[in-house]
Length: 390
Image 1 (cartoon, helix red, strand yellow):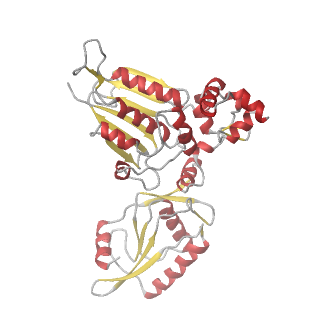
Image 2 (spheres, rainbow, N blue to C red; image 1 turned 60 degrees about the vertical axis):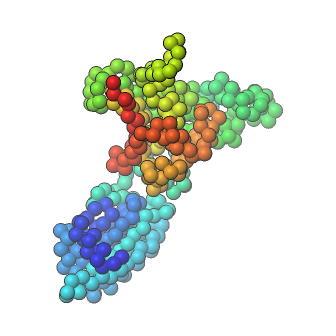
Image 3 (cartoon, rainbow, N blue to C red; image 1 turned 180 degrees about the horizontal axis):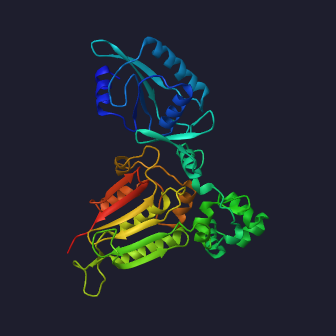
């Protein structure tokens, strides 16, 4: 970076991408800071700068010591190794030295220090990760593990809805489930493993959610909390209708669309007297958004989906912000990332979903005023559609 740019950064103060250090802090503590940046969005550590933005500068001996510490930390105290860049800048008429350590966002998350501790940025500070779900989420971001492939403890082939799965199998493979098992000399458990719906003796999350008899028995948080409010305040306690929608993915989709259909207005327009009229918000747009909500949420988060209908808007809320540097601008342009590949692959045969990454584009074409919001702070993705106030 240019020195003028560095001065501007110092003037803005510390944040989640920039940290100030007055002097060397030792290789161990430096490793923790670099791990936190690598596990987050990357960033810069500026040595020779006080917390308040004053620049006392470094000595040349400090710079030599820091270069040694950076090499030691990056190669020997971080797993896997990272590759930061360093720059030395001279600031002011007296040429005070500032060392900038530029740390890219890691491509092999999660990173840990030598003791095995994982760190992430929390504002201008850092915090240690202890929750298994957060570590798994970083593994997911690196495509090393997916939530839908993990076995669900306590489940077995007995928790499969055999009628549902049998209908699916006959429709897609041209023979009955019993015929296929007999002809192939397979058990139902082996077949489920072959199809990627089980891991060993247990159903995986994809198998449970796609074809399980009672998925919420094992994953009670995976329900849709649907509420139609009076007014526009989500904290309001007056509502027209509410429902907890459960079941497999197919049931969740059907229940969500039914709730929306009965709680939104039908507009007669130029329809005949004896027809129901069109839904005030495009049915096709809502269907695309419900499918997106079900298939692309973060299943490492134990939380429900929410459908909230207000007088002036409809909100569909999914646990999990957009993954892998995906932005709202990206998805508005047709860029997509499949977060749950097994669920997505079976959903093409179970839901109105083609799996080609154009669902949001179709929703936007039917509802141009659709608002999309990805909140890293709250770890939520929200699709919001205004309603015409009458």
